[in-house]
Image (cartoon, rainbow, N blue to C red; front, side):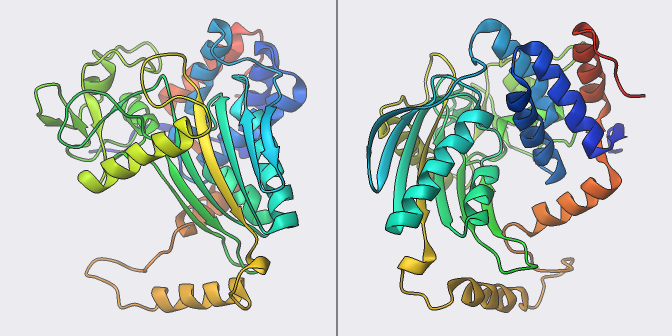
Amino acid sequence: MADPPTHTVPADTLRYLVAAIFRKAGCDADEAERIAVNLVSANLTGHDSHGVIRVSRYVEDIRTGKTVPGQSLTVVAESPIHAVLDGNHGFGQTIGPQAVDMGIAKARAAGLAVVTLRRSGHLGRIGAWAERAADAGLVSIHFVNAPGAQTVAPFGGTGRRLSTNPFCVGVPPMAGRPMLLLDMATSVVAEGKVLVAANGGKPLPAGALITTDGKLSSDPATLYGPLTPNGPRSYLNGTGAIRAFGEHKGSGLCFMCDILGGILGGGAPSGPGRFSNGMLSIYLDPKHFGAQDFVRQTMDYVDYVKSSPTAEGVEEVLVPGEPEARNGAIREAEGVPVHLDVWVDLCRIATGFGLATPA
C-alpha cells in the first residue's frame, strides 16, 4: 500500500497556525500557545494521533461546551505528599501543567507525591507530562482514564466498556541522552490512531478492532461508521470497538487505569456521560531513595540492554523514549508531515475564523 499523501509544514508555522485558531476559538493567547505547543509536540515525536488532527475536535468541544477555555484547577484536598484536584473541564494543556507542577513541588519537598486529577479536558499526549517531571529530575508514573469516551471492549467481550486509558512512566536522563519514556494506550491502538487511519493515514494493525458479532477488523468504519469524504471522521458512529492489547493482560491494566485514574480521585470510570480525563500521578525524587547515582546507573543499564544481539531483520534494540527523541529531532529540522486531509481541514477551520493560511 502506498503511503498516504502528506503536506510538510515547518514546525514553527504549524504552531503559529494552531495557536491562531485557538485564539479565534475563544482561548487567551497563553492558552492558545500551550495548546499549539502540546499538539505539535505530539506530531514531532511521531504520535500524530495526539497532534494537530485533534484541532477540529477541540474546536467543536469549545463550541458545544464540553471543554471550557480559561479554567484553572481547584484543590479539593491536599497534604504535604498528596493532592486531589478538579480540572473544571478546562483544557488539559492548561490543567495538566498546573497539576504536574504541584506534584513536582511536593515531591521535591517530601521525596514523593501522589496527585489525582478529575474532570480535565483532553490531556493530550501523556508523555508530555512525564517529560515535564523528568526535566525537574523526577521519576513519574501516570494512570489515565476517559469517562465519556468508552471505545474499548474488555477481553472476552465485544461491547464498548473501557477507554484507551494510557499508562505512562518517565525517568530523567543523563545530559546528552534522551529520557526514558514509556507512554502507551492500553488498547491495541489509541483511538486517535483509528482517526488517523480514517483520514487516509497509516493503516491499523490486523485485528485491532472487533465487531459486535465478535469478528476481528482493521477497518476504521468499525468504530466510526460509514466514512465520508468531507473532512476528518471524528465521531464514533460505528458499533464496534477497539481491542485491549495483550489479551487479558492489557485489558486488566486498562481496567485498573479506570479505578486508579478515575474512581480513586473522585471522578468517574469509563462509561456514558460528559467527556473528561482523570489521572493519578506518582512523583518520585530519586535523591530520597536507595539508588546511588540513580541516573548514571540507569543509563548504564540502558547500554547493557541495547548491547543485546539483534533479531533477524532488526537493526538496533531501542529502549522506551528513543523513537520519540529521534522523530522529534528530524521533524523539528525538516518539517512535520501532516496528512493531506488533516491539512485541508486545518486550513478550512482557519479560513472559517477569517485567518490567512500558509502557502
